[in-house]
Length: 102
Image (cartoon, rainbow, N blue to C red; front, side, top):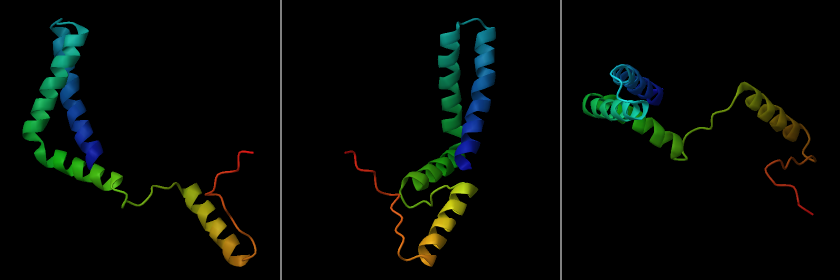
């Protein structure tokens, strides 16, 4: 959520600046470059707390320690598979293995 919040702050800075530079007719490419640089500078100088929170959230997500994000359907499928294996010990479910390419 912190990453989304910080991204929305940056977007809220970028869009009005882009519109301003486009209105001043500096050209589309220069408007994008100027708006991006100024939005970056403002967010870097004044939104350190939000940037740090977004960085921490991304670090946690990509560290390998975070819980996997699963949909309700995936959770139900996993629970059904676990029940099947528990009720029938003679059935083996090997959906983590790749099929042989023969």
